[in-house]
Image 1: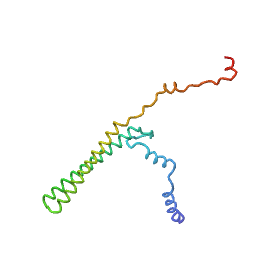
Image 2: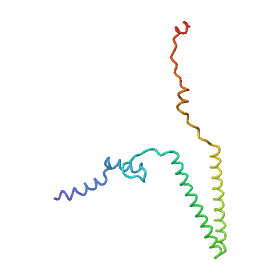
Image 3: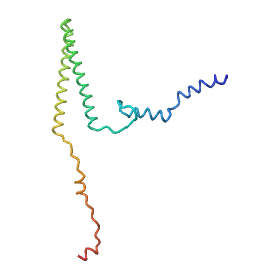
Image 4: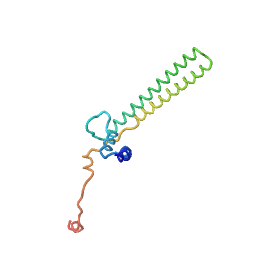
Length: 150
C-alpha cells in the first residue's frame, strides 16, 4: 500500500503531461480545419476563392462601418461635452471632427479604387477543352525512304 502512495502521484502527473493520443490529436486538428457550423463527420474541402473573397470583403465592410459609427458617436459626445463645459473641450471636438472627416475621405478613396479596379480588370476566360484539342495535333514521324518514293 505504501508503494501506491509513492507511485500514484507520479503516474498521474506523467499521464497528464503525456502527448495526445493519435485519435485525440486527429480530432483536435480536424476541429481546426472543419467548418464551424457543421456537425457530424468532418468533410474538409477547399473553400471556393469567390466565397473567401466575398467573406473577406464583408468582414472588412462591417469593420469599416463599426469604425465610422464609433467616430460619429465620439464626435457627438465631444460636441455635447464642449457645449456643456466649453474651453479645451472644443479643441478635442475639432480633432475628433477632423479625424471623422479624414476617415470619410479615406473611405471614399477606397471605394473609388475598388470601382476603378472592377472596371479596368477583367478575368481571363478559361480556354475550353475543344480549343485545346484542336491546338494539339500529333504527327507520326515520316521516314526518309517514304519521302523519296513520292
